[in-house]
Length: 261
Ligand SMILES: Nc1ncnc2c1ncn2[C@@H]1O[C@H](COP(=O)(O)OP(=O)(O)O)[C@@H](O)[C@H]1O
Ligand SMILES: [Mg+2]
Image (cartoon, protein in one colour):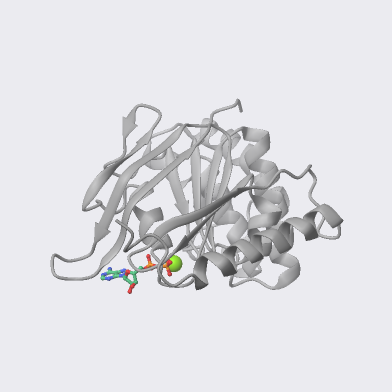
C-alpha cells in the first residue's frame, strides 16, 4: 500500500438542520494537509458530529463547501470513510466477510478479495481471527474489524466520531496508538472527533477546539510530539495541560467573536 493522503479544505461552512431552527455552526474554515491527523475537540452539542457528517458527504451543509484535493464533497465515497462509536458489523458473517463486503460490492474477484482482506487484517492485528464469528470477538476486536472494513477500500481520509469511547481504558489506549501508527504508515489523513483531551494528545498532529452556539472553531494547537507517543512522557503531560487550558479558556469565554462584528 502506498502513500495516499489528501488536502482537506473547508470553506465558510454553515449548517442549520431546519430553516427556523438554530444555526448549528457558522463560517467554519478548516484546512488539513495530506497525511495529517487532525482532532476536533469540543463539548457535547457544539456540532462536531454534524461537521464530520458533512465532511463525509453524509449530510449537505446549508452553505459552504468541502474539498478533498480538487473534489467537491457532495456524497459518500470509498475515498473518504467514517467510523462510528458502534462497529455496526453483520453478526451472521465471519470477520473476513465483514471486512471484504465493500470489495464484493465493487465486484472484485474472490482471490483479490482474499489477498486484500488478509493484508488488511494483518494491519489491524487480527490475522488470527479471519474465520471467527464477529459475535465471539471483544468490543475492541469488533472495532478493529470495523477499522479493517474501512481501510480495505484504501481510503485517503478516515473520519472517526468518538470511536473508542465505549471501550475500556486499556483497549482504548491500544487502539489510539495503533490507529495513529497505521494512518502514518499508510500516509492517509485522519479527522478524529472527540471530547477527550488525552485522546487528542495521543493521536493528533493538531487539535482544533470547537465551541459556542452557533459553533465556531475558536482555537487551534499543533501537537508536535515524537512517535511512538508515550503517555508518561513529560512533554506529553505538558501538551495535555496546555490543551486543557486552551479548552477551558475557549469554552468558558462568554462572548468570543459572535457579537463582535
Ligand atoms: N438530525 C438532527 N436534527 C436536528 N438537530 C440536530 C440533529 N442532529 C444534531 N442536532 C443538533 O445539532 C447540534 C449539534 O449536534 P452534534 O453535531 O451531534 O454535536 P456534537 O457531536 O458536538 O455533540 C445539537 O444541538 C443537536 O441537538
Ligand atoms: Mg457527536
